[in-house]
Image 1: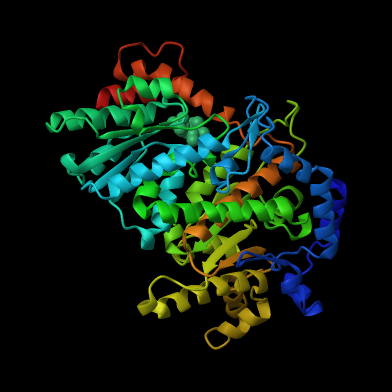
Image 2: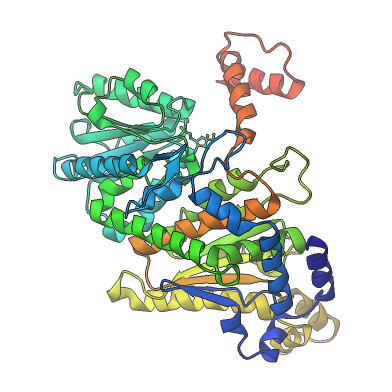
Length: 526
Ligand SMILES: O=P(O)(O)OC[C@H]1O[C@](O)(CO)[C@@H](O)[C@@H]1O
């Protein structure tokens, strides 16, 4: 099927997307999927009925449906770590049994959720003014992205997120927090991550130095209950989760506690319900109408078939400002691999480089390259039909107009003739030609748009689950294990070894010339 897709791509080389709309008045509807009030429109791509059928056949050939069912059934599909992959159990609110090694995990999942809700309710009414989530990667990006996204629903204490081992992060945060009314959440699946442990210790020392003490000031979220216990945090304030919740898939459970405290248990449940609705859609809808499946297949068409190495995620929703960063971990840590599940070299490129910024800001920064650069960057637009500021509806109308204008401009472009007309009054002769050429937009650049009524907890849940399943489908088709992350290990090991060389406690013998030179600079200037 890969070869067939390559030849379909070759046959379509140079064919204009706008011409496809002219040929087929029903194109927009035919290449869109509506589900639970959201609409995913992928009609502004070169995908036509034949390509779409071949992409779906690719997914069928990779047994996406069977692998999906194996994931939901608790099979150990994370094969390099021998683990099940069951973040979906965290949003399985009706409690239908989910078995791991023959045991139903749901009673414990729901009990933990209830305990989290009790603590969140207590904290929201206890005079705590500030909550600081200390975590990194999956223990930071999800709740932080969610807290920004759901700002209109934020009626709990202020929430801060400290992740970087750079002392600037915690120092700047602590300046904004009153010690007597601040709660710290240590969020770490392993409870060994150096950044998180270093920041947690600094917070601990700070409270002691302020004369406030640490009693009742810490909560721990982890799979490593033994390590959490070493901190002396009372059991009632430790929330465990199992190893079948991957870090970057963990915001639905205990790692989401800061978000739950911010928006309240009820809205957090609504967020879970949104994720659950997307799970239902993913499990029950035929592949060709399945939103995560088609989102993944559009990505495969652009990356593995057409060779576009990056993808821009462009939310026209300022509160989704951290979504691109969240998706970078979700997608690149999951599918940035060079070996297939059986350990052989990957037959094709791994997942794309994902990047982005909210619109309209990005328009005034990097869109120049997207429109006129030599490389094609497939764009993923997102926008809400309605904002949360009824008095500022004119802002929202402008926002939507800009979002739609960008996908139209990318598709249509501007021809040399049109560019000549633009500058005809100002230049003539050779200069007119030269000036006109600078104003040509090649167009025919693909984009998709995800549109939803309004960014609320349920919609956010749907969007996050949509992308999780997209990553899963892409991983299955590429034959990648999307649930391990061995590629982060080497840097961690080398950083541990370099620590004493930075402080001067050990010589830098054996290091390469560049590393020695950089260490030398630090020693002379630090
Ligand atoms: O939650 P932990 O164990 O502190 O890990 C934080 C992050 O570090 C990583 O392991 C990568 O270094 C991520 O996968 C994870 O989300």
